[in-house]
Amino acid sequence: MDLELVLFKACPFAQRAVIVLDYLEVSYRKTLINPTDRPDWLLEISPMGQVPVLRIDETRAIFDSVAIGEFVNDIANGGLLASDPVQKGVERALVEWAGTCQRAFGELITAADEGAWHRALGDFTNKLYWVEKLAHASGPCLMGEGFSLVDAAMAPLFMRMRSLQKAVVCFDGEATPKIARAMERILATAAVVGSVEGDFDRMLRMVVRGRGKGGYVDSRMG
Image (cartoon, rainbow, N blue to C red; front, side, top):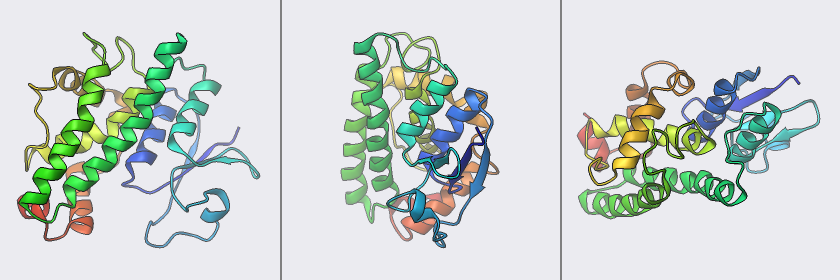
């Protein structure tokens, strides 16, 4: 297969797909597009004009990061989901929930003032609670010993949390010890480290300036 991943540079959902493809050493090529100047052909392969999209061939494409991750895991026999049906269901639910957590993080960086920030932080903390609750008791990754699709789904958010934490406290590692432990391991994984190019802190700063200019986080990032 001649796989082509269509993505935006700063998109955390596209980053998920990059991580799974690279972790499982699946050959593919990237096509970067500008989110402010999306080509007309994007709507032919993605109904909402969103990324990531994984083109399989000239007529077929997969347009959702969750579906892309499972597809890549299947074709590579990657074993990134549990074999037990119940545990597999829990892990698939957490992969979906990672997107909910990511969107809650988006509310943090766009909070207009301190009051909005604290409301958004409370919601974000509550969302992270479910990851902490369902994570493996001793790790070192979220689901246990090995890297999983849950880790790949949470990795982009963990990267953003670590970067934002340098400017403003957005999570409490002591209150979420399983997340804190797994975050360290996941962010050191080669496929995660290599999933973004350039200065990540600078990239997040640009995202904050673009989405939350003049807001609470923008004022604290300098």
